[in-house]
Amino acid sequence: MRPNTPLHLPLYAGSKYMIPEAPKRDVSDRTKGAETARGPDQSPGEKSALLVPINRVPFDIFQVIITMCQDETIGTFRFTISHVCHLWREYALVMPLLWNSLHINKRVPGWEMLEALLKRSGQAPLDIYIGQPPFVKSALPHLRKIMRMVLPHSGRWRTLHLNDVPYKVRRILLDQIRAKPAPHLEDIKISQSPLYDRPSRLKLENSSPNWRAENVFVGFPSLHSVEWTISTSNLSALPSFKNLKNITLGEDTLNDIPPRPFIQLIHRILSDSPSLETLRICNNTITGWGDLEVANLQLPTLTHHSLQALFIKSTPAVRSAAIRSLILPKLRTLSSIYWADLVDVSCCNIIAQDNSLPELRVITICGDIDIGWLAPPPSLHAHMSFLGPAIQNLVNLRVLTLRAINFDGGRWLPNLGKCCPDLRWLIFIFCTGYTIPPIRLMVETRMLRDGVSPLEILCIQPLYDAPPECWVNEEDAAWFSKFLKFKDQDDCWQTEPEVSHF
Image (cartoon, rainbow, N blue to C red):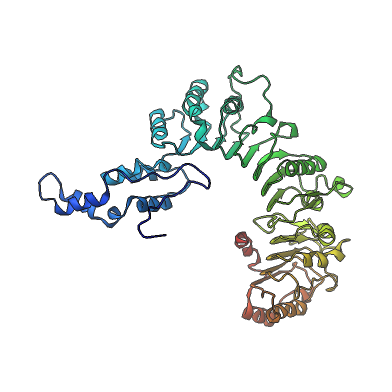
């Protein structure tokens, strides 16, 4: 950038909204006046404030500094900087992006303050949050005021978050919102805790008689991210998720959905949003529930070419069945925490034969599902012959966790010395049927082989009653520690929070 080029910060790519030009009174003129002032009209404090280095920078640089200091949470930062001094207040009041967040979450909202925020925000995009407290006692009057205030500005909406808004209020709001053009609305988040979904005396005369949940997100051309967290065991109560890039069905959304409809829902979402990049979906069930149905479940394979992150919270058997039914050539992440989204060895079949996950960075492969510290040794899995070929196809893998797998005397231990060139972490949890020398040889081979990255972290956590050959003695631990960060059974689980950066 050339030294004298004015710096502007576009709000987002392709937006017509820009941070404004400097106020008419330039800061250089004011500081020059402070240096030459001699009369009694200007106090020493005012002159010293104008001469502070931060007050001598050009207005556009000042904007950059303030924008970098402001976080995404709703707080007092914007009010604080506007009360530092007269110059800062003058600057703050002409920076619309400081005032474009409306947080309506008090039993008696500050209507005058909200109107002032709307005025100060100018033509900047609006981020709107509406919580439950305004509707505790005066639901209808507050609802009318909120709609009269925000609906005329629907052309500026960027994000909308409805949190614990009662059902009938939420239904009226969504119906009114759909009736207004919102061409720049990008992100909608609707969450409802059962604790706050209390009965309301409101009638629904203002809501369309043809209101249907599936049409909630229809009519927003720029919408690309949706988070929906409203508890249900009825899939027909879900809206349609079409042409989106990010979809989240939160923790309490789906309850006890049988395996087949649940996996079919995943397929339908992927089919309706061909450009989808992230899908998070949760189905709250009891561990083991539906596993017998999954064993005989036959579903057609679906290919999706854009998905990069997939988080499925369900039983391991159901999650594995979903993975077996998908071919995801761009998928990089199955979970942000390695043990939370493990898949069983049965998934290795499609990974080996169809190369269904070539871009995957992190994976946890499990043999016996219900394994733990005090559980019996894992049994031999019927699909173990696909484990090695599957791992060889994961050419972009960074973190590999093998959990509760019986390697049958090393027969099924993958040869990681010549595959997975970008592998950084290798983790063994509750495995058996292996010995330490082959693992040591693999670590040494990766250090010597060209084009293959050496391991950075090795973690080995045997079962409590594992045979001696599965445990790392002091000599081996010292050798591993020379070349990488070695974790033994005492601190192996501390690896968990570190994996998210992959």
